[in-house]
Length: 399
Image (tube, one colour):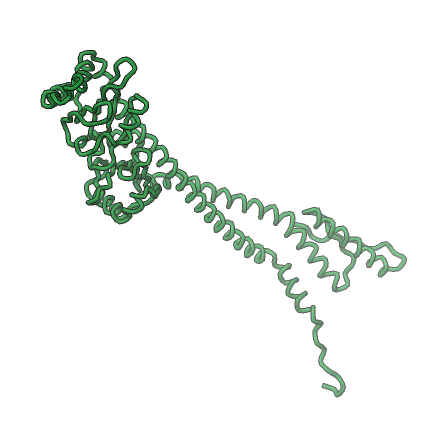
C-alpha cells in the first residue's frame, strides 16, 4: 500500500443499511419470524385470559352454588319449625286440652302444691305420642317448669331462661328455635296458653333432626350437606350426605379450627376429603348461634364438570383468535410488506443511479403516500439528469 494512503473504510451507516436492505429483500423470512412470535404471544395471552376467566368463573359459580345451597338448607330447616308450630297450634286448638293445661298449671289459690305432676306427665306423654313429637314440656306463666316428658333434650335445659321462652312470654306469641348445645339439634317451639288476655302457661314442644333431612336438602340443592353440633368433647356430625370417611374428615377439620367455629367467624372454607379439596360454607342454624351449623359442600366432581363444560368454549376462543391473527397478517402482508418491498427495491436501484423508475402506490395510506413522494423525488432526479429530453419512465414489477 503506497505511503500516505490508507484503506478506505466503509461508511458507518453502510453496514446497517446493507443489513436492512438484506432483510427487506427477504421479507418472507422476517415476516414469518414476526408472525410466529406474535402468534405465540396471542396464544399465550389467550391461554392466560382463558385461565383467568375460567378461574373467575369457577369461583363465581362455586360461590353462587353455595349461596343457593345455604338458602335451600336454611329453608328446609325452617320448615321443621313451621311444621312443629302447626302441630303445637293444633294441640292447643283442642279446647279440652287447653283447659286442662290451665287447670293443671293453676289449680287455684293456695293449692298449687297439690299438683299431680305424675298425672300431668302421663297426659302430656299421651298427647306427645299422638302428635309424633320427640319431647314436650309445660311451663307456668312465670316460665317455671311444671312437667317434661319424652327425649331428654328439653330436661337438660333451664327452659325458663332460654331466649326463645323469654321472647314468647314477652310477646305472648309463638316462637321457635334450634337448640344448639347438644348433638341432636332439635327444633323447639314455645306456644303461649292464654285465657282471655292473660298468659296462663307455655307449651314447649320439640323434634329431633329427621334422618333424611340432609338428603332432602341435598336433593334440592344438588350438593352435599352436614348438620354439625360443636360439643365440648368435639364436633358431632348430626346428619350428613357424606360417606362415613368423609364425615370423619370433616369432623377432624372442624376440630382443628374449633375456635373459629365457636366464634362463628368461619363462613367459606375448604375441607380435604379423600385427597380432594371441597369448597364449603357454614351457616349458623339460628341467629347468634355458635354451636349448631348447617354446612354445604360442593363435590369436586361438580367443579370438574364445570371445567369440562367450559373447556370447549375456551378452545373455540383460541382457534378464533388464531384465525383472526392469520387474517390480520394476510392483510398486513398484502397492504404492508408487498408495497414496502417494491419501495425498498426501487430505493436500492436508485442508489446505483437508476432514476428512471416508478413504483405503483398501493397498500396502506401511509405507504401510498411514501410511494408517491419517492416517485416525485425520482422524477425530479431523472429530469435533471437527462438534458432537453423527456424522462424515461418504467414501472417496477408489482406483485
